[in-house]
Amino acid sequence: MLTKKGAATRQRIVEAMAAEIRERGINAVTLEDVGQRSGTGKSQLFHYFPDGKEQLLLAVAQWEADRVIEDQQPHLGQLTSWAAWRRWRDVVVDRYRRQGVHCPLGVLITEVGRHTPAAQAVTRQLLAQWQHEVQVGIEQMQDSGRVSRRVDPRRTAGAVIAAIQGGVTILMSTGSAEHLEAALDLCLDHLRDYR
Amino acid sequence: MLTKKGAATRQRIVEAMAAEIRERGINAVTLEDVGQRSGTGKSQLFHYFPDGKEQLLLAVAQWEADRVIEDQQPHLGQLTSWAAWRRWRDVVVDRYRRQGVHCPLGVLITEVGRHTPAAQAVTRQLLAQWQHEVQVGIEQMQDSGRVSRRVDPRRTAGAVIAAIQGGVTILMSTGSAEHLEAALDLCLDHLRDYR
DNA sequence: TCCGGAATGTACTGGTCGGTCCAGTATGGC
DNA sequence: GCCATACTGGACCGACCAGTACATTCCGGA
Image 1 (cartoon, rainbow over the protein chains, first blue to last red):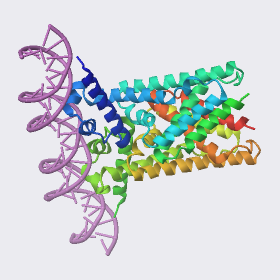
Image 2: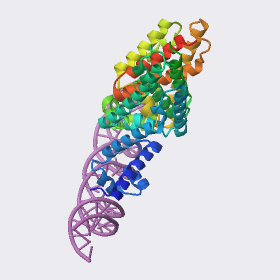
Image 3: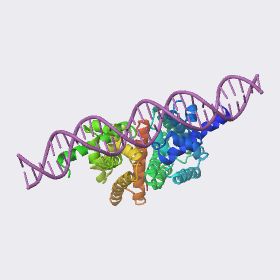
Image 4: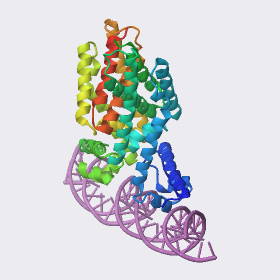
């Protein structure tokens, strides 16, 4: 029902759409563009995504969401020392700075994610998982006595995610990662110093 | 060249477009919708905005940007005591919570603002002004000895703006203001406690 | 080798929407 | 009151694009 070749083509279509959206915005992308970029045509596209653009968009959202988490590993999963937090922070800032305006996370949240309820669910799931990983990191730091017990891990993890999200959104508007760095550093300072 | 009646019609068009965008997203809005809602037609629209949709969009961006700052006044302009910061915080959270998904700021930044370079300039200007107002507030608190001199006012103001921005973006994805509150409160805690 | 389903190419369509045209009406200054 | 100019209505056009139809080619298993 789906040969190896077919699966590869399908994947090429998803990645082509994702790249087009990142580079030119979701509104500007047409199915013809996607066909051209992926070396296919509309007939393949509708062959693999019978419900058309919307279904493809959902696949793109899922693909981008997976990448957001992936890109931060293995650091995000081992936030057990200040050095690890620092490394994670650097990876996040560096990656988003380099990606600049063409940032999967930003595009996902601000463009793809709000398109349909199904895509919204993908972003919600991404945010939840991300926040959870950070929360676990904070709890580990509390267990080893490096972060005050007065910090609410869940709420603070939420604040960290919001800070990154805001920094990235501003990065996409202005091209500068200053806000992202400032916001993330403020969160880490707070974790370190709050008593 | 523009009578009172004409100016009123023009303004009606801008507000109709803004409302439509807030409610249905920028992609879904057609010029016919705007005409219908404003009680006009396309001919008026092109009469007042000869360059069409793009020009209108820019006017909408400017109008929404002005409202973002306006909505926070007079609190934003007088951040001279912790009580004042608290009031400002409450106004921001309450307003955005009520507006939920239909938030001028969110729509401006994530949809309108990235459409064209001109609209980008509007959002940049908004962010700069906003950050500046917060920065002045921090400096005033430093002058009265309520905030540590070790805090960098400009950078911290940037972090605050990013925190709000991220909270709002997440609010638009999930419908919950939790992240906004957590992020903003973390910033204020940090201002209050950092030594 | 043959066959059936999967994979692909091409031409077409139907609807939508930004933008235009032009004719008619209000209005404010003199 | 008159006239220039601002304002308004509505029909129309042309481009663009998601989605369809159908014919053709590829390919793996029996």
